Length: 112
Image 1 (cartoon, rainbow, N blue to C red):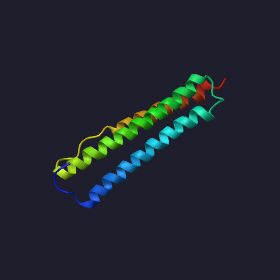
Image 2: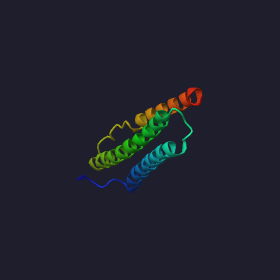
Image 3: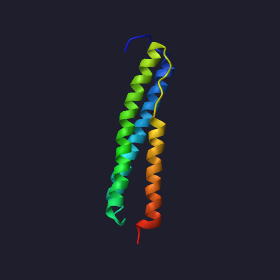
Image 4: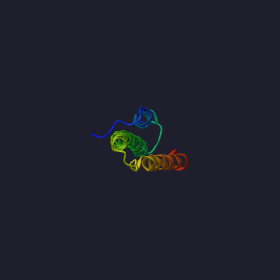
């Protein structure tokens, strides 16, 4: 990556953030599988699959974004450059928004 080695505390903070995003991605993926497998009473079935798909895609996107963010942040610290902007919080907020919207729809209209 080049540049100078940053203070280890900043490197460890970057790694902790990376691991937190990985945990979030794993939780989203597991929730997607659980939604499809265990919400079998949810009708219509497409809603259950959509719920699971949004969660799983959110998990994959979070995991990939975590790696990209970790690499870019580490490289910026080594160069002494400003830390790069990230869309990760926006992506996670959007995923939560969609899942919550689907849950509201499910509560209001899904079970007849």
